[in-house]
Length: 182
Image (tube, rainbow, N blue to C red; front, side, top):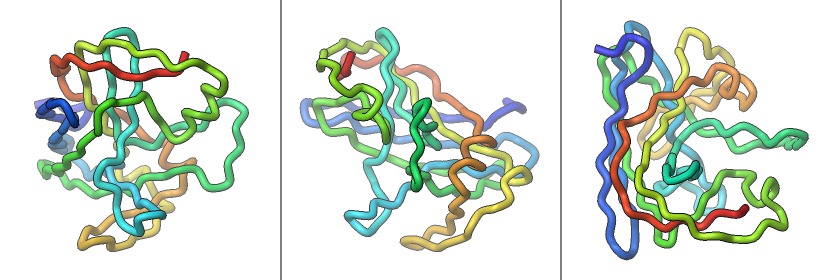
């Protein structure tokens, strides 16, 4: 049993129209944690089913649900902040998302930090799913809320970011073309 972080399992299905991900996060720790995997879509007025960030490094893509840091020098009054779901020891949380093809590298501030750069297509052969999480005992300033039948907690952006850790799935083999700005 992994005693230092939760365990993340990933199933990937790929077709011409979409990349579908199913994930499972198991709290293998001896204390409760929050996983940052729910985001409210203000336009749709509901939790976003397809929300994820995509980063490319060489031939590896990382798809994540996490608190994403602000780019250096950017001041933003209301940074995008996901809700946390409580996972007690040995509890499991599941989720799924579908990324429409063609997939593009993205995060909440991507267009700001890549302004003026040209789109390129890169081939990716491996994919990892990353989950942001934090120890419940270290997260204190959250506001509980119930959305769509789920009990969630919204922590202030800076607290979530400072206390966040990461758990990655094993790498899945894929054959993807991803658009990046470089």
